[in-house]
Each structure stands twice: as structure tokens, then as C-alpha cells.
Length: 241
Image (cartoon, rainbow, N blue to C red):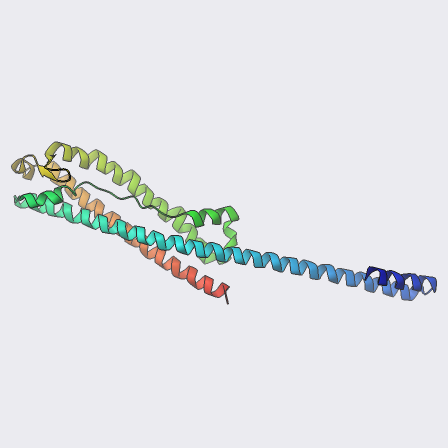
């Protein structure tokens, strides 16, 4: 192709047809520019297509992570509901001055907490590629809010407030007023004294409040995750059309 254009130029110059050569030269420049623009357009299209493909891959990975997070949250909710029930039963029995060795199972469930193990591999990959790879502004904000704000708040409640409460309040009360009846069962050292111990009952009441609060937070986060999964599914559907 280059040789072909070169021959035309040489022929026009040799025939001293400068005006035609000038027109030809301008036309050749235009063709070259058009070729460059086409090449750039193809390259830009390829880049955009590659980014879209990467965005889809990240969203699919994130959806999988979030589905796993929901399973973990439901397990944590279930455990906290069991802990709440145990504390409520113990508190009620003490308030009514009733005791039976069948209650030892619930005394053994006074202590206990949960730590939500979130999956962050997709979000870390997203951060490494740049959050702007998610073109949908609303979706990007929802993702960032969940991982950077909501998940961090859960961590704070679990590791700062609840864990501290367990070690500073629950465990000392158990050590002072309960003893191991068997490998996994606790029983009151003195039931009559314990039923009159307002400090012990107050700590159990606070633990009920803590379980209720954590259950509420977990359920709220579960709802947020479910809504985000639906938003991701909708975005993926639109991307694949």
C-alpha cells in the first residue's frame, strides 16, 4: 500500500502536475488521519470493553462474597438468640426464686459472644483496580458504605463493646457466683444468695440488652446486604444485555 502511494506521488511530480499532487497529498494526509482515528477508536473500544469485563468479574465475585456473608450473619443471629433466651430464662428464674438443675444448661449459656467474619476479597480487588471501575454511582456508593462504614461499625460493637462487656462484667460474675457441675454445665454456688444478688441480676439484664442490640444490628446489615445483592444482580443483567 505504501509503495502504491509512493508511485502515484512520483508520477505526479515527474509530470510536473503540482496542483494535482497537492490535492493528492492533502487527500493522503486525510486518509492517514482517518486511519489513526479509527485505530484509536478501536483501541479505546477494546479498553472500555476490557474494563466492563473486569467490572462484571468483580461484581460476580462480590455477589458471591455477600451471599457467604449472609450465611455467616444468620448463624451469628441464631447464636445470639440462643444466648438471649438463656439469659432471659436465668433472669426470670432468679426473679421468681425458682431453681432446678435443668436450668444449669441456661446458666452455661450466660457467657458468649459472636464475631462476624466478613468476606472482603472482592472489595480489596475493587480497591486495587480503583472504585471508579464501578460505573453506576449509586451502586458504588452502596458498596463503599457497606464495607467501609457498616462492617466497621459491626466490628466496633463486637470487639470493643461486647467483648469488653464479656470480660469485665459477665466472666467476673460467673467466676464469683457459679461453678462447673460437669465439663460443660455451670450451676449456682448458692441459689438463695444469687436470687437476692441485684448486681448479678443487673449484669444479666445488661447482657439481654446487649444481645437484643446485636441481633438488631445483624438483621439490619442482613437487609442491607440483601438489597445490595439485588442491585448487583440488576447491574449485571444490564451489563450482559
